Length: 313
Image (cartoon, rainbow, N blue to C red; front, side, top):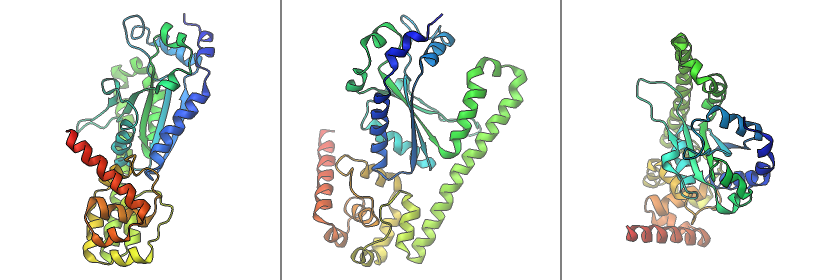
């Protein structure tokens, strides 16, 4: 029997979790993506229970527990999941082979997991006693689970009801109940897709009406410090060509650009969205001329890094 008390002193480091959660949250927050973030360190009781429950999996020569520290990111929009993953993998070492990214069949409605395993930064791993890593099957890693607001509640219930009693739910007598649980997820998945479709339609209507501020709000779906365009930028986007080019910008591509370290920290304003698009994602001399020196310097740094990366490849 594993004694839970032996883990308490080894894992009682809430400061490490706080630092990790702040680092992850800051990375995502700087892109403007709407999200909530939660974190936890496994309790000594939970560690002991898991080592007993999955005793055949963990042990000498076997796997190691990789979720001592866990971060959960709950996103407002389904299409931010891949964007969020890419942001994290550009700043932390992702262990692909140990991560779980589900891609269900088209006729299969079951929960989609985005459980990513990252190497714990060295300074954080060193905050724990060496005994934790050397004497027990616990890895120097942390897990990030990425969910949407709609699916978050489902995953919580499903984890308690079905996942923790997996053997019981594999019984043929549970087949109908399992299908019913999956049908709930199918409904929530439709909700995730529908909300994006609604906002995309609203962005198109605003584009047709020539309301650029509204178009930016619905198209990019990010938290802005200032949703209003300055008069010079507003006059520039009255050009149908400029307005059309902004509307045709791929949102995921824009978020990929803004998550680059050269641009992290750029104030999230309607002006800056337009100016970054006009300097990087399409070419507009008029918008380039309106770009403030500080932002222009950051855009130049971004382009230089991209150019260096292309030359290396």
